[in-house]
Image (cartoon, rainbow, N blue to C red; front, side, top):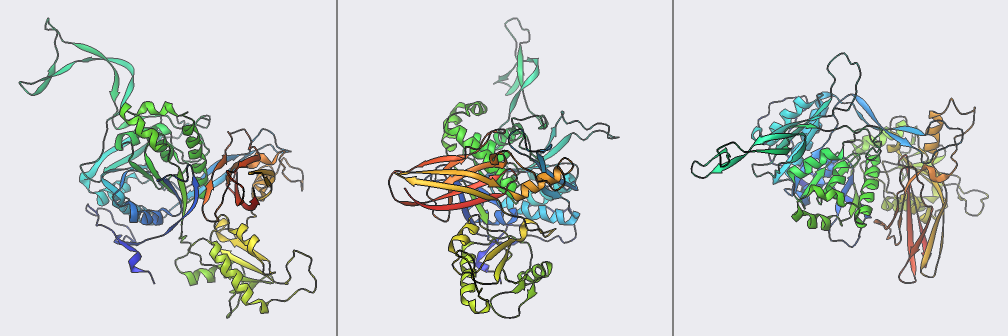
Length: 612
């Protein structure tokens, strides 16, 4: 049963319902979903932080209602276009040569843009209703779409915001995208639908340089007639001037990001150019305004907002998008801390620059939303999972079933598995040790019972496995299986492994990463290069650092919030340092936590208690 105190009411839509679909229902109330702070980047003592959420954006929007209702000035979204296509991210191994490997680029599926029409329309309707609730009276929304569903989305926006609050349909003409002979006029534009919350919406016109200087007649204000009139000189001749700029209209001729554009290309399938977002953010927000993108992808909106001195909130359901965005924003924060982004301030008025510099010092926090709605019914979810994996059900007792001589415990599927859940499982094992059979012999450090425990969960906290390893004193092997890693093929992916050593003393600690293995990544390389590799040979890398995308270190981990005080994000063909010196103000005990992310987005986390 839902807690009514956690439900939030939603204002009625503003326009007429001109579009019907199967399963259409109004969104009148929505449950509040909590979020957990997981990581912090930048100054952890700062009073304010920008926010990046990993989770379903419907739940994130519901979470934001509690504190941000009526407080967001600009929303830009680039949602799925319902294009019936799968979108992949191209992942490249660092460095130049790999042992016996010809292809060092892997395609990793990010999301499938395949929907039933009615499902897609309800999906967008619910989210747009919540977005309107979040906007200030001065707020606007820019919805990026194309020919697949722009006609439907226009009608939904009319219903949610009211026809009177339609502002523009911007045409983005990407003239440099070549399509070859397609048997029709090439589709070289997207549409951006612009709506406002009210007539008070922020809007600043934007000027751009003309390709050719234009000779214009000068006009002046006539105070007697209260009209503009043509200016004339002393001889009565018309006065002209050379106009080098024009005010942009609703057709934007901006280049598409091409594969060769290394300055911006991140390998993300639907990445948009920063110049596009610069126009939108400058036109419909002020320095200090809050900008929201709840389909943030590679983080372009957030990156531009950070550069232009706006507060921002981002969200994506894809962990790969969160990792790409985190890396991108850290590079901007690092550059801003060194004063290397002054080139971006030319877009601002002189009076805005000081405020933008002040806001650029804000760091950001990464949150998880504590609901992952894989199944609607928790009881049904448990039955389905046990059936999928062939678990033999146990009708009574703490454990849910038996699989391969292991007891099985299925955790709640509508949220990630936490350290608190680990404590519960370990207590359950201790309370039921009478169900386990002791081994006749066991070596030091090995389990002392013949049976183990398999825990099934739907996602897990970053440091949960590390916590389990350090706190399991039951004598029973505990294996955690994450169904989110591969729900369709039911293949359990092996987690990465690393060899990390720490030497500490005299108010210093040196972290050395000596090896890193990513079984999933190497298997994908083998699949890509199966013709080049000899039979039964395995893919290898010359240097383990070639497969690492980034390293982050919390020098004083509190066991809860990961504060990335040391970040190593090398340039595209460079490698991580692999050794890091941590300095402390005083001697004592502390916990050092290390997070390694490989180029595929797989994460490794380990913490160490040290005395410095």
